[in-house]
Amino acid sequence: QKEVEQNSGPLSVPEGAIASLNCTYSDRGSQSFFWYRQYSGKSPELIMFIYSNGDKEDGRFTAQLNKASQYVSLLIRDSQPSDSATYLCAVISSNYQLIWGAGTKLIIKP
Amino acid sequence: DGGITQSPKYLFRKEGQNVTLSCEQNLNHDAMYWYRQDPGQGLRLIYYSQIVNDFQKGDIAEGYSVSREKKESFPLTVTSAQKNPTAFYLCASTPSSRSGGAPDTQYFGPGTRLTVL
Image (cartoon, rainbow over all chains, first blue to last red):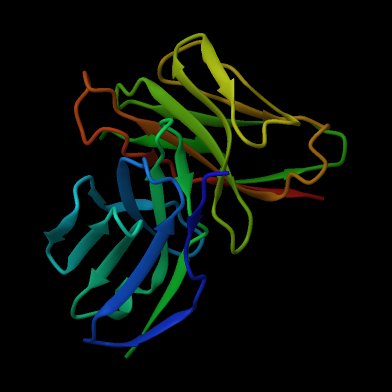
């Protein structure tokens, strides 16, 4: 059973600090990795995707992928109250299935 | 504006009724998906379709049915056989390499919240 694991949280971070969200996956052959943000009662929206080992930066967001350790993380710099949401990790496995984590609830405290 | 629309936003079903959730996209995406999300949980795949007139079961297809007669439309019917249908239903689509966009990225509609009375 291929799995994607996330800490459900909630993760509470002060405004202006760095929020660090983590995701581990079981299928070593996984190929593509996505972070989605979901506000309460709304549909998920893509934040970032990453395919290669290392860091990928987009504004205040940085995705980090370490295939050897089978984890992918999302860093949010200068956290804002509007970043409060549930963050979903999704992974495309070696057999091309998209597998979702259950999400981490992030709360940014003003 | 290009996007995915779902209707209705809220839907109430009586016991024993079949109901159909609409999903339409004008993004020219080949693949479309239906997910179910329960409170505090991730997304679970119900059905997906990679091409018109073809679809496959996902992880929790029992009690659901779909059709894909047009590229733009992928309606989901929740049948009376689905014993616990109260959930948030999300439709998504994925661009093919021909239509552009980051491959495998899922674009979601706004969702339909179904409640059984």
